[in-house]
Amino acid sequence: MSNGPLRKVVFPVAGLGTRFLPATKVVAKEMLPVLDRPLIQYAVDEAVDAGADTLIFVTNRYKHAIADYFDKAYELESKLAQSGKDELLALVQGTLPRHVRCVFVTQPEALGLGHAVLCAKPVVGDEPFGVVLADDLIWNAGAGALRQMAEVAQRENAGVLAVEEVPREQTNKYGIVDAEPVSERAARVRLVVEKPKPEVAPSNLAIVGRYVLPGRIFSLLENTKPGAGGEIQLTDAIGELLKESPVLAYRFEGERFDCGNKLGLVQATLHMALKDPQIAGHTAELVRKLAK
Ligand code: UTP
Image (cartoon, rainbow, N blue to C red; front, side, top):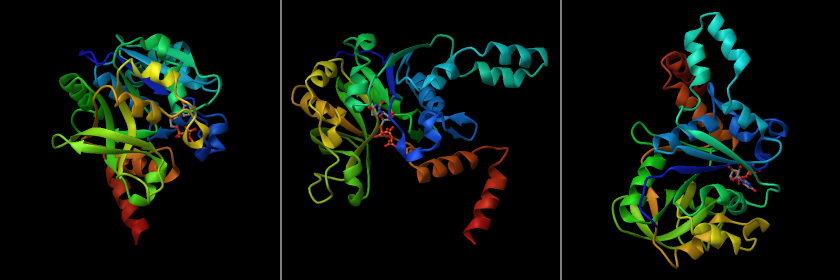
């Protein structure tokens, strides 16, 4: 993998989001808010923090809201400007820094995460790139998870997968790695298996929604057949990648909330509310009351 800063980040947002139906009939899962910001905003901020200047959204035909969200809102902005609501105007204009551009590509059919990533090939080319799944919200007080991973990828000249220990009984929900520790947070991946049953899982170290990958992954994805769940799995292509170049599993610093399910979204919301100076006190009180 060639050394260099991480400039391009892919956001696969073309999934069906069935766990949030009926809301996701019309609202993309990535537009669900945690407090006042949609999940995709947290993901984009993390990518920008990692140095990205080109954001590639893999969308489907129902997800115009994401493009609209990052576009200029002329009418709203001029109304806020006229009425002197400068703080709100700054919020509306601040969804994306000026030096960052967005590219939208379509995944015509939801054939799996691997297929969604492959749809970004014409924009990414053969340079290393990041993949961020916005429904995994990762909060860290210091450097974001993707920045931590980009630094490791650059230093070690390797692909990097974010991993976290999960309860054994949940291995069938994740890509699971078998990896040999090389430092406090990094381990060299020997094997990856998509959604293994607990009794055959090689470990309980699960891949979560952050990847730094070389452009070579696209050729491997082109030859990846449908795997678990009949979908083209990114994990299967990574399994081929690690036969030819190093891939590290990296235990990032930060707290992950799986906002692809209801409980995770509630946890993320409470976490962020307890960090918001305006509502932290009331939220803490509410939590105490409910716990009684
Ligand atoms: P999920 O496995 O969470 O699927 O996808 P989903 O469709 O979004 O949600 P559920 O399970 O039906 O509730 C993981 C990530 O991969 C993207 C999703 O948008 C999500 O960010 N994805 C998945 C695609 O972009 N295309 C696909 O074909 C599948």
